[in-house]
Length: 310
Image (cartoon, rainbow, N blue to C red; front, side, top):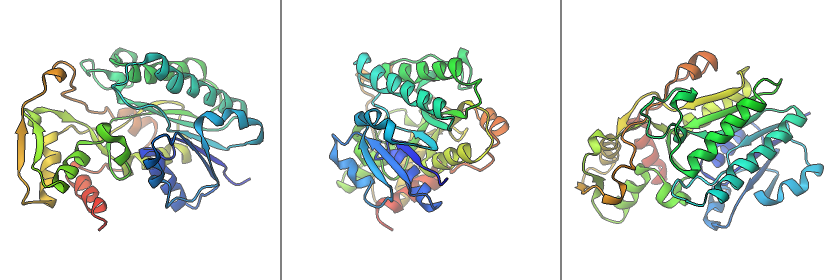
């Protein structure tokens, strides 16, 4: 039987790039679910080939008429500033549980989006261990709680169930994310508005694991196509690079634009991650993912070319 694929969040940033890659691999029997309340997300679907689109709230009412051979669960409310914990837990946690139970019933692979946000401020490290996990907001808690649920209830079953803890993902298809989009995209927009590129004071010491979207999709496909044990895995580069390094890569593309440092906002003091860096031991050794990751300089410059349509 040919693959019948479900991609939740398929109009979103990671989901749409995943569908694009699946198309390149010859797969088009794909059902996409998402929430198009923000209609601008439709732009991410225009050039994709897929069988059907469903609002994410309508999916469960149609279960009896649907069959999938794999679920890529990329849909979630990913806004870390949302304070409504009931909403976040309903959309991110309870919805995910229903999908996972369906996957278990049908004995099909279930590959889902977790988040490096489960590590909180990272003071205990970024390894896939309980002692490193300290979520600081409802979004992070919802991801943390679902990881724990999956590991407790399903990881010992004969079912491929894999969570990927994405670090700071950037690349084409994130325009709809607005304030939650990457620093590279914000800098690009400042350039296009004729402004200087603005970074907070101290950005040379703010280090994040910036991972290019093509690498993220490559990891997802690897998890699907290879014999990988169930569990949660970090998805980052294993390198921490500064916000200044991102700005310097943008500046290489727009050398006439000035870089300006602005005061660090009072409201962010004590709430801003200064360092993230994925521990890749499990990804490399247990999952067997050997591909190199794109550097910030290379990835940001490629991203600028794509934004310019080059």
